[in-house]
Length: 163
Image (cartoon, rainbow, N blue to C red; front, side):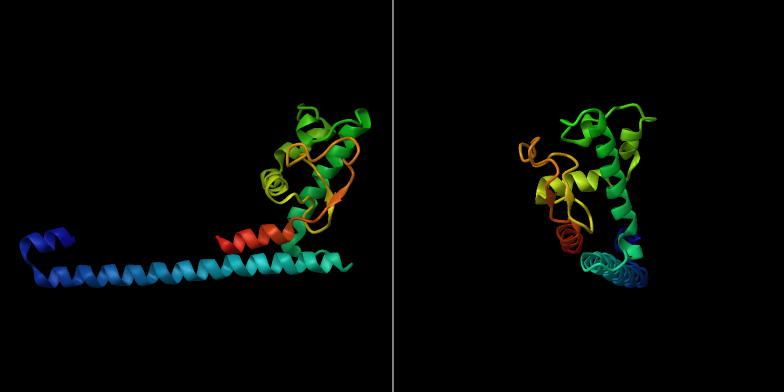
């Protein structure tokens, strides 16, 4: 539209184009700011829910799905270790989808937990927990596989807010 107005030397059309571009940029900036506030607010609520759990309060709704996913993955790993106590990580569990130790593969949170364990050396979401993925590499062995690590909620929510 701007190119046509410029080529045809139609000033009023060029003016309309400029105003439309300005309106669109203002709308995009406002939407971006609102989305950023929404993400930051959600991260803050999740962090507050997890802090409540740390002091013995019930788990709030913002953090519930992630904590339940971690609990399920931890249960799957415990199930696998019943058969072989030397299993260090979830990926060593049976691959059959019907196996009780393989339900974690369908979790939408496994990549988040794996990445957090690698980057921050944490495990668990709201509560401290043992490593699920034996990360960073070499940090987990048969002697410390049940050692609790700091919960991952704080570094993960800081990362969300920084993006």
